Image (cartoon, rainbow, N blue to C red; front, side, top):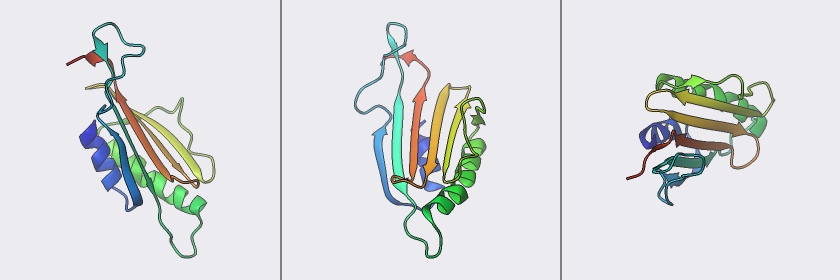
Length: 127
Protein backbone atom coordinates (compact mmCIF):
# COMPACT_ATOMS: atom_id res chain seq x y z
CA UNK A 1 0.00 0.00 0.00
CA UNK A 2 2.74 2.47 0.94
CA UNK A 3 4.66 1.62 -2.24
CA UNK A 4 1.51 2.12 -4.35
CA UNK A 5 0.82 5.44 -2.62
CA UNK A 6 4.40 6.58 -3.21
CA UNK A 7 4.17 5.66 -6.90
CA UNK A 8 0.82 7.43 -7.24
CA UNK A 9 2.14 10.63 -5.66
CA UNK A 10 5.24 10.48 -7.90
CA UNK A 11 3.09 10.09 -11.03
CA UNK A 12 2.28 13.83 -11.11
CA UNK A 13 4.38 16.93 -10.65
CA UNK A 14 3.12 18.72 -7.56
CA UNK A 15 4.14 21.19 -4.88
CA UNK A 16 3.79 20.92 -1.09
CA UNK A 17 3.77 17.14 -1.25
CA UNK A 18 3.22 15.71 2.24
CA UNK A 19 2.84 12.17 3.45
CA UNK A 20 0.65 12.49 6.54
CA UNK A 21 0.39 8.82 7.49
CA UNK A 22 2.76 6.30 5.97
CA UNK A 23 1.42 2.88 6.71
CA UNK A 24 -0.16 3.56 10.06
CA UNK A 25 2.76 5.16 11.88
CA UNK A 26 0.26 6.62 14.35
CA UNK A 27 -1.01 3.13 15.14
CA UNK A 28 -3.24 0.60 13.49
CA UNK A 29 -6.95 1.28 13.11
CA UNK A 30 -8.95 -1.56 14.72
CA UNK A 31 -12.36 0.14 14.33
CA UNK A 32 -14.80 -2.21 12.63
CA UNK A 33 -12.33 -5.12 12.56
CA UNK A 34 -12.60 -8.46 14.37
CA UNK A 35 -10.59 -8.79 17.57
CA UNK A 36 -6.87 -9.21 16.92
CA UNK A 37 -7.00 -7.50 13.52
CA UNK A 38 -6.76 -3.92 12.28
CA UNK A 39 -6.41 -1.81 9.15
CA UNK A 40 -3.21 -0.13 8.00
CA UNK A 41 -3.57 3.39 6.60
CA UNK A 42 -1.80 5.82 4.26
CA UNK A 43 -2.52 9.51 3.62
CA UNK A 44 -0.80 12.10 1.43
CA UNK A 45 -1.60 15.52 -0.02
CA UNK A 46 -0.15 17.86 -2.64
CA UNK A 47 -0.87 20.98 -4.69
CA UNK A 48 -0.80 21.71 -8.41
CA UNK A 49 1.37 24.80 -8.22
CA UNK A 50 0.79 27.73 -10.54
CA UNK A 51 0.40 27.32 -14.30
CA UNK A 52 -0.04 30.56 -16.25
CA UNK A 53 -3.39 30.82 -18.00
CA UNK A 54 -4.87 27.72 -16.32
CA UNK A 55 -7.36 27.83 -13.46
CA UNK A 56 -7.30 25.46 -10.50
CA UNK A 57 -10.53 23.88 -11.75
CA UNK A 58 -8.94 23.20 -15.15
CA UNK A 59 -5.85 21.73 -13.47
CA UNK A 60 -8.07 19.47 -11.37
CA UNK A 61 -9.77 18.18 -14.50
CA UNK A 62 -6.41 17.66 -16.25
CA UNK A 63 -4.73 15.94 -13.29
CA UNK A 64 -7.45 13.49 -12.24
CA UNK A 65 -7.39 11.29 -15.35
CA UNK A 66 -3.65 10.45 -15.33
CA UNK A 67 -3.71 9.77 -11.58
CA UNK A 68 -6.69 7.44 -12.01
CA UNK A 69 -4.79 5.71 -14.83
CA UNK A 70 -1.79 5.27 -12.52
CA UNK A 71 -3.97 3.42 -10.01
CA UNK A 72 -5.34 1.19 -12.76
CA UNK A 73 -1.79 0.33 -13.87
CA UNK A 74 -1.05 -0.63 -10.25
CA UNK A 75 -3.92 -3.15 -10.37
CA UNK A 76 -6.78 -1.15 -8.83
CA UNK A 77 -10.34 -1.11 -10.17
CA UNK A 78 -12.62 1.94 -9.98
CA UNK A 79 -15.71 1.53 -7.80
CA UNK A 80 -18.20 3.44 -9.92
CA UNK A 81 -20.92 3.23 -7.24
CA UNK A 82 -19.07 5.71 -4.99
CA UNK A 83 -16.88 7.62 -7.47
CA UNK A 84 -17.64 10.98 -9.10
CA UNK A 85 -15.93 12.25 -12.22
CA UNK A 86 -18.58 14.62 -13.55
CA UNK A 87 -18.20 17.57 -11.21
CA UNK A 88 -16.18 20.39 -12.82
CA UNK A 89 -13.07 21.09 -10.76
CA UNK A 90 -13.49 18.05 -8.51
CA UNK A 91 -13.00 14.33 -9.00
CA UNK A 92 -13.46 11.67 -6.36
CA UNK A 93 -12.36 8.14 -7.17
CA UNK A 94 -12.48 5.05 -4.99
CA UNK A 95 -10.29 2.20 -6.21
CA UNK A 96 -10.00 -1.36 -4.90
CA UNK A 97 -7.31 -4.01 -5.25
CA UNK A 98 -8.79 -7.34 -4.17
CA UNK A 99 -5.48 -9.00 -3.40
CA UNK A 100 -4.12 -8.00 -0.87
CA UNK A 101 -7.28 -6.02 -0.04
CA UNK A 102 -6.47 -2.30 -0.36
CA UNK A 103 -8.80 0.64 -1.02
CA UNK A 104 -7.49 3.98 -2.30
CA UNK A 105 -9.56 7.17 -2.32
CA UNK A 106 -8.27 9.85 -4.68
CA UNK A 107 -9.65 13.40 -4.49
CA UNK A 108 -8.48 15.95 -7.04
CA UNK A 109 -10.03 19.39 -6.59
CA UNK A 110 -9.65 23.09 -7.22
CA UNK A 111 -9.43 23.79 -3.46
CA UNK A 112 -6.13 23.43 -1.58
CA UNK A 113 -4.83 20.84 -0.97
CA UNK A 114 -5.56 20.02 -4.60
CA UNK A 115 -4.69 16.34 -4.33
CA UNK A 116 -5.70 14.11 -1.41
CA UNK A 117 -4.83 10.44 -1.32
CA UNK A 118 -5.93 8.07 1.40
CA UNK A 119 -5.68 4.31 1.54
CA UNK A 120 -6.51 1.53 3.93
CA UNK A 121 -6.11 -2.20 3.98
CA UNK A 122 -8.71 -4.77 4.83
CA UNK A 123 -8.57 -6.02 8.42
CA UNK A 124 -5.20 -7.76 8.91
CA UNK A 125 -3.72 -9.62 11.87
CA UNK A 126 -2.09 -7.18 14.30
CA UNK A 127 1.65 -7.48 14.51
